[in-house]
Length: 281
Image 1 (cartoon, rainbow, N blue to C red):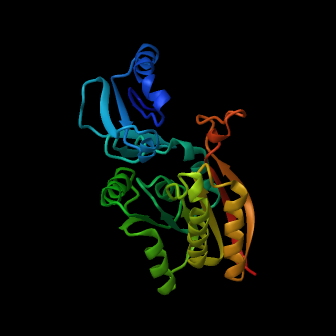
Image 2: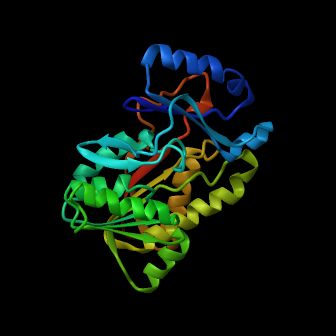
C-alpha cells in the first residue's frame, strides 16, 4: 500500500491477501481516514494464482486529478490507475538520495526512466544534461511535464525507445555519459526465468558500460527477488572484463526502510543495486 497524501493505492498479488481485501480496506479507512482508496490489482503475476486482473475504487469517489508525489523538494505527477505498479516507486527514494555526491556538472543517462525519478533528481542535484529514456509514450510525456513543473526543462530531455536498441544506437554514435542509471523492470519474475534473466541483466549492464566515459559511474538495479545480489554483480563484472574495463564497487543499494525486510521472509528482500566506478582496465 502506497500513500499519496489522502489517496491510497493498494495491491494484492496472492489469493490469501485477495480474500482479506475487505478487512484491509476497513482498517485503512479506520486508521488513515483517506479520501480515496484504489485497488490496483492488475499485476500479471496474479495469474499464477488464477486471480483476475482489475483496477477498482475501494473507498471514496473517483476523480481524474493526477496524484502529486513530493520527493526531496521536487513534484512529480503520477497516475494511480494507469501508471506502473501503484503509481510511484517509493522503494528507490533513499537510493536516489545518493545522487547528490555523484552528478554535479555531469551528463546523465536515465534508462527505464518511468516518470523521471532518477533523472529529475540528478538534474536538481546539478547535472548539466539528463537524457531520460522509456518505452512508454505516456511516461515520456509525463517526464516532460514533470521537468517543466520543477523548472528543469532546459536540462532534461525525454526519449521514447526500447532500452536495448537505444543503448546500441548510442554506442554506434559514440555518445558518452558520465553517469548511467539502469533501473529496469523485473527480468526474473519466476525462478524458472533465472537463466534467461541473468543473461539479460549482463547484456544490459555491458551496453550501459559501453556508453560510459572512460572514468564513469554505473548505477544498476534489479527488483527481481529471484536474481541474487551476487549474481547481479557477477554479471556486471563479466561485462566489464569483456569490454576490457575495471569495475569498482562503491555502494550497495537496497529498498528503503518503509519497505522493511523481514528476516524470516526472504522474499521481502527483493531490491538490490550497486553504484560502480568503471575505468579502463
